[in-house]
Amino acid sequence: MKRRSESNFGLHFDFHADGKTPELGKNFRAEDVAYLMEEVRPDFVQCDTKGHPGYASYFSELGNTAPGLAVDLLAEWRKITSKYDVALLSHYSGIWDQKASTEHPEWRQYDENGVWTNENSVFSEYADKVLIPQLKELAARGINGAWVDAECWAMKPDFSEVALKAYKEATGLTPEKEGESFEAYKNFCRQGFFAYVKKYVDAVHAEYPEFEIASNWMYTSFCPEQPTIDVDFISGDYDATDSLNTARFEARCLPRQGKPWDLMAWAFNIQNRIYVNKSAVQLLQEIAVPLSLGGGVQVYNFEKGGNIQRWIVPILKELAQFARAHSFLHKAEVIPQIGILFSNKGFYHNKKWIFSKYDDPYVAETTGLTLAFTDAGYGVDVLFTHNALRCMDEYPVLVLPDWQVIEAELKDRLDAYVKRGGKLIVIGANALDNVADTFALKKGEVFEGQTFLEENGFVTGIITSGAECTGDGVMGARYTDSYKESNAKPWCITKGYGKGEVFVVPFALGAQYRQNYSFVLTDIVREILSKAFSAPLAHLYRRRRADMTLLRKDGHTYLTLLNRSGDHENARVRSFDDLTPLSDIKIAVAPEVCAARVLETGETLPIREENGERIIVLPLLNVFATIELQLQ
Image (tube, rainbow, N blue to C red; front, side, top):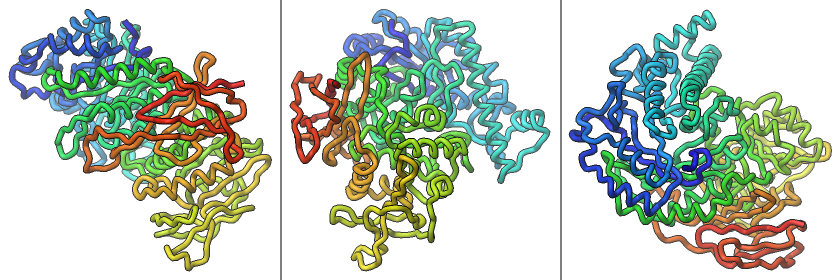
């Protein structure tokens, strides 16, 4: 049986038992689960054990079994998965347990307005009385691990009595609900969450060391910390809508985190409470993203009262076959090319929630820039501050998004990085403020509103704010009107610094890239990179709807290509099964690349010269392709 942390493909089923379903599980069919295992052969399965309502979907000794449960669903899943040598994990809702907090008001988490948030306080006895005993109970029943849901993303500023008492005992203070006092209190709640996770992970591991645990979205863009708690793997689930772009951003945050990781694709789209299942090709795109960056994948489908949808098994089988065919990429190392800086300090600055990226304009800006640079046809990673400090010198190009604040140490390291020859792209007025003194950049008048950008003879408008800047050189033209009758100003300013160079785009671009996309914006990024990145190992020769990644593993170098066509961003389209193939994709490769072969077909791609660049051409890209590059 493969361990969860060693797996690259799994299935997830949950239904959040609510205590209102009579004869829950009575329609469970063991033969359907056996059919699923026989056809799909996943590395692991995560099944429902306790959802947000707080009811266990198995016969638990803790007294929270769902009323009317007719079948011990967990026992049935364990029996069948054991027969097929498949690991079985628990989907278990963490701090969001409405039954526990209803029965124990003293455990409740309250927001700053005194409103119960449905969650339990991490400062309460909830972990000792429910979470830890139940995870141990699951381990004793032969379950291999737990994917603990509703954790950091469900955490709010906690104004419960037990939290305020803990703060008073630790600091002697009573927190205010605004200003520096509130920021200090939110950080206290943050540390309380870390202590809570460490407590239950350590307690379960002490008795059941082989029981593998992940806290959903911990150590990701929702919680961009250096892993210090002994979770066994990092995991999170995509947004149910526009899932491909969720994957494209989140998967680029995780390869440097030093833990096995995977991401979960939802097999259905849900808007306005309407469930629409996705097609195989749509899901292939979504699972290909983490696979192309060395991660694993899991696919979530709805499981009503323990029943699985038999008709979806052929789709799941196709996904599993795809993942197995590309398992050689699992735990491959991403080759550093472009690093997007994700500031830990910027993330937590004046944050509404304790963690979570939701409603955070600066994460939205960083996400948009990540997609923009990926769309430009280059290999891109997102570097949390601790990873940037550790390995920024490995990256030929770094990008500083429009964070309001960044760490002083990060500024110092960027100073040294550029002096040694690094190329730094600074995007946004806040980003300019953060490093203007460091690089002796002169900031001018502030502007806001509609701005028109020109590149390659095309003009596009965006709504943004920024500040003029002067340097050694300029790129592009920016106007206040679409007729180009105003005086042109540059959309990028360059300044030499030591042996390196700084490129300043003096206005925010990332959020507009997602909300008001134009190919002109992609071309602007490509033009900047043509000056900033002189020797990439590989990049797309022209703008195409394809993502490229570069990986290495066991002496091999891989280039992957993903066709990202389709109506992913269209809120009116829930599911589609037509994907336009991309033909004649030209890839510029560095001089050290001496041969290229498509692994899926065995086809050798000749290297030819074109306009001073060395080019290989992939004749056709349906969904995904892996090219092995031989380096000299």
